[in-house]
Length: 124
Image 1: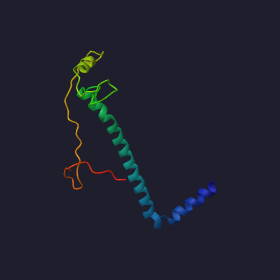
Image 2: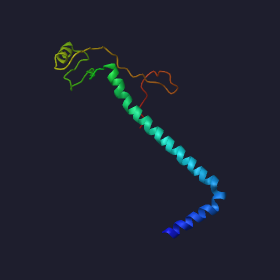
Image 3: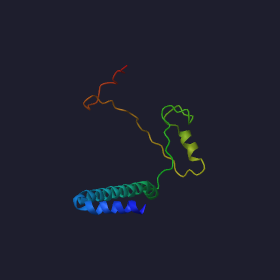
Image 4: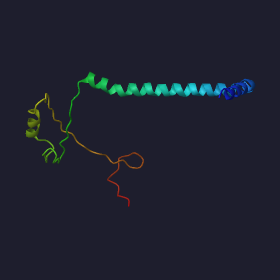
């Protein structure tokens, strides 16, 4: 094993003058890729903790519920039900309930981004 290392050391010394630019290139590339990898890991960790920090600073709602025009999961067949809102407000650990009347519309855009007159026909 030591004889093999001796041969490798001899070859390195004998060819270093001609190959130093290649060695330097490899060292710089390894350094750059290592730096990019460490930066990506640091950015990923910072991004991972950003939402938790934002969540703690804004005191957000814990739950949002869309009852919609027909939602059998919540037992409602109308968009707004005052009895349903009151029932949710009286549940344990509920501190605040609000309702909003929203218009859920999806606008069809034509091929150039302008609003289209109607829904396009389905292609088969």
